[in-house]
Length: 244
Image 1 (tube, rainbow, N blue to C red):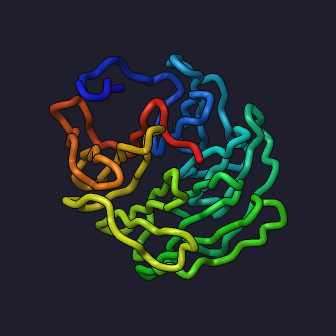
Image 2: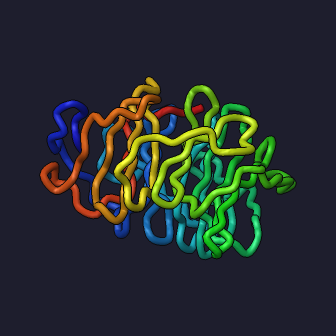
């Protein structure tokens, strides 16, 4: 954990963590971390898990929540998107986008679920489940991607997606790439927006760095790495990240 603007370590969380991946913070301040074969949740200020989601999970690659606190998990090996009620280890709904490589999941303010995936041939897509996962009525959006990774919404319903060696911005109706955010990447895998919508955090797997950008202009504020105590990062999130 680093304190913003000072970028000095103020602590760490190791309890319950075996293989940390993507991170998310909900509206109540709970932290979620994909972790090997489960997702662990930490209450605000806690360094020990308050709950663990594991039902049906094999290798979760991304986690997010909706405005009600329901937890959504993209699982690479199980090839599904699963929904858990808050603090329940029983899946309430799930959908299989197909025999694809799932990359990430995001939920907008209307409760629509967006799932990014690759078809394995350097071609990526996003499927939208309007109204949630019930019925699994997914629509593949028109935008073409390369190899998508993490994604997140901003306050304008623009969708940010790590894609190959770039981070793209996709504006509604999500039919084409509208622009890019930042530069200097090799393999960006995670993007999050803070609550104020004035900073973005991008994790680069190959460079082992976290880029902090002013948002939406994309001006570099700080590049965090070994000097900041960071080694092989897989996710980065502000303690008050933006929830649509």
